[in-house]
Amino acid sequence: MRKNIVAGNWKMNKTLQEGIALAKDLNEALKQKTVNCDVVICTPFIHLASVAAEIDQTKLGLGAENCADKKSGAYTGEVSAAMVASTGAKYVILGHSERRQYYGETSEILKEKVTLALENNLTPIFCIGEVLAEREAGKHFEVVNTQLKEALFGLSAEDFSKIVIAYEPVWAIGTGKTASSDQAQEIHAVIRQTITEKYGKEVAENTSILYGGSCKASNAQELFAKPDVDGGLIGGAALSVEDFMGIIVAF
Ligand code: PEP
Image (cartoon, rainbow, N blue to C red):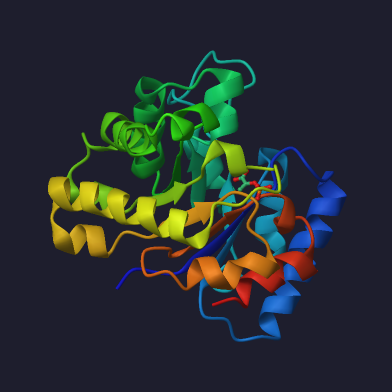
């Protein structure tokens, strides 16, 4: 059966010291409570090694927010999948809309990143989602299906099974506007159907599809109650233990 997952995306927030403190406090909170989902935090690169040394990854998984599309070499400022893995991190967010929008990440680039992440035993949390104009034009299903197919459908079924999908409507990210639980369910079901058509029912049923976009304690329960919503990718609300735990306990 697929896993329920709540993953935090810290984005470009928290100094090293603040990040270590947040990770330690979250790890402590998770030790005190039995939860019904996997919990992951994805932090800036510079936090990874220090945070890995402070947390119990059987309770709190660790991931990066990105990795390079090249293996190694003269790519100043880049961080490779192998480097991420060497910190002890096990996950990597790929294809976040902010990376697509501000850093020009295309499906071609993302394909390379996914391959390198998998080669280094990292679990990609692969983001797809439409912008507002695309939803208003009724193109949201087509947009997410194209993003899926272009970047991921070259993978073998075995490799695809290692991917976590995050559906994140761009109009809901950091805006306080959440997709309704019915909107989330509708598009998650379409995504699962598209995966079924390519890889078969078993692979599709075992794929975790997370919802992201202004998810918070007050709406998480309704979203997570939907049959095809297997958890959340959380931005703003992952920056405080109280807010993040409020979402985690929604399962
Ligand atoms: C995100 O950036 O992945 C995200 C879902 O952000 P927020 O929860 O702040 O909307």
